Length: 455
Image (tube, rainbow, N blue to C red; front, side, top):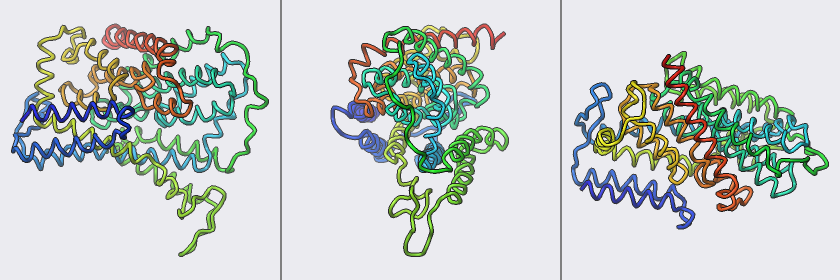
């Protein structure tokens, strides 16, 4: 039966990676794969196990208990993401991101490159790399009219956004998974991964700034001709970003799961959104303001209608599918085989369970295969302690490795759609910049781990 389990997982995984060829949204094979895997386990009465991280061994359990356990862990991630997405949509409802355009004062292409890269790096650490890319490319389209030049900028924004998301517990889905899964803590993650992520962003920008595409000035009459849609835009931007940044502090102080803090932040932001909304309410109708959406009685309702539920369902399917393999002990045994067959390139810490080579391969693989299931699998495979350097290296590699292909990250895919970036153009022009950034940051991570943090 284990062979059937593996076949179902491989077929589902291939369908996810080939969603563009099959023209089927990846949430469909993810949900189908999850349901079929657990059905096979139940119908075949297969033994299921829970990993005892203290003893590093498998303990038998009942399918109802292990299913509820994994559903609870997955729900923590999904509820957290729902809260973060809603806050971002509330900010957008008040046109808060238009405030960022006020920082753009220069017309020099080289200075704009650095400005957009730094903005992408910082924003992605707060509102996640996908949203940061959408916001900045929207601004980019208003600032730079020449499409060929915009493509170059978009490519560097992808690299910077993915680098910025890797060091923050709220900057990338995979990093959030590690944080919520108690594999890393926010302060230690930042301590280990921030500098390598900065290097991963700075090195490609330094090389690219010498290119002809970034010489001279942009040809545009005015950087910002649009009047703000709401006078509360700036207030909601700073309030929303501050509320999201507050979540790691809430977890550190209370030791409660991160989604609790995110729900508190959402409640605060939603309260101010209701206060600032110009809607007049009645039982049967809404006297809407300029920004209201037909059929919704508040900015919160309007924002909830715009969050990406397909992404939420995809994460549910893929995380529960990987949980099925973990419950059968497959990932645990695979990790044991990996440990005995590969050379250990790490330090004397417990992280020797995984070699640096394996983590680098995971990072490169995330450019081809979705990094969410890769990180989910690694969380089920290895039983190293919380804040072991291997988790930080996985966060860095999975977060930044996807930049090497346009389809290798959510930021790349959304940029591809917004600017109609050709796959082979990106492969030829941008991929090598992403690769040298990835390798440079990885080298810095190893140096810091071996010679500074262990000193």
